[in-house]
Image 1 (cartoon, one colour):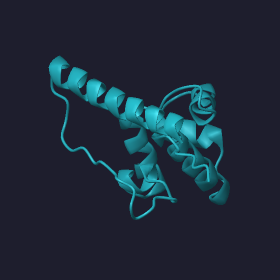
Image 2 (cartoon, helix red, strand yellow):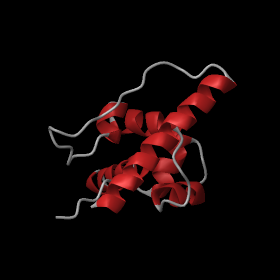
Image 3 (cartoon, one colour):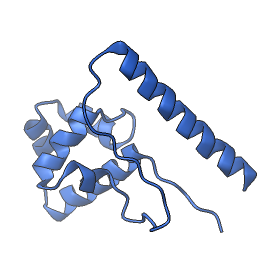
Length: 116
């Protein structure tokens, strides 16, 4: 059985699109709430732009949910490992170390997929 693991960006995009439809809100309305242009919202929700953490926090606030609820897949299984990071990256070294960690995780997931 093939399993598709959604990336955080995809999860957020899907949830925001569903929420906009359920609430009968437009991209223009969302752009006004975010303080950005309508085309930028289109690029973000079409996956052409990666959502920055600050933007994800804004979206969660607009939707009236927590950031964790917004980024968490509805299909998370009980045996699936999740990692929650807290705090801020205050310097370049910590940012590089986080990037290195994310690279290692993605590398592991890629290798795991190849083995299947």
